[in-house]
Image (cartoon, rainbow, N blue to C red; front, side, top):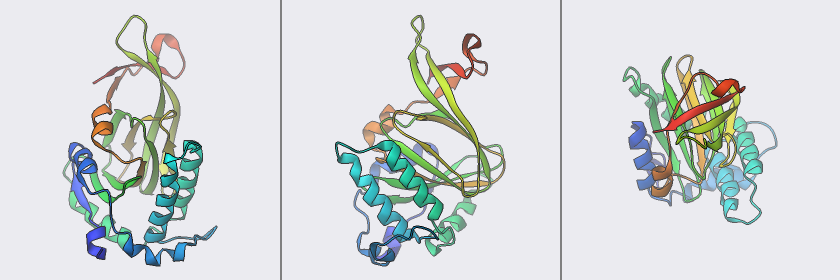
Length: 241
């Protein structure tokens, strides 16, 4: 497949992003992986975009094995993120395209890669923009801060209240992501999160498995009380939207 067919940088809103995640073809440009470090990834130093995608594909494909460990996978994917050469020409093109969304008063999503076992997107926030509390059912996520500064809050779902339709969330972390820093989630831990940018910020995000109709349909958004539930530290009551 030609290089220009593989690298399609698409700008869209959040609903559009979920729709694209379901609609884009599952099979994309394996032929252009020939320059991916010949299948060899250095233990240190930077790796190019093709090598990065090749290694993520190899690791994400293990999710179909009985002994697949989500924690081990996100650790490996986070290490690959840290090695990614952000000056790679493919990513430079993506960063350039993100600037087209400046001033539109929304978070922008750009599809970078979609395969059967994972997908990669770029998110752009302007100062103060945020993605409110939401989950990624049955999915893992690895976020690399490429530029800027953004706060990330992660939560575990504790379950429903006995006397209410509301749920209880436990805040498990609150981190400030700066350039080169990574945040992760699995299907069981830290799966609910919120992001808010302190300045112009661009993130690269891996989802494994990728969005499909079922995962998009099962995704939830939460209205979270600002004060802890009945005085419990880091536990909050929330309503699913």
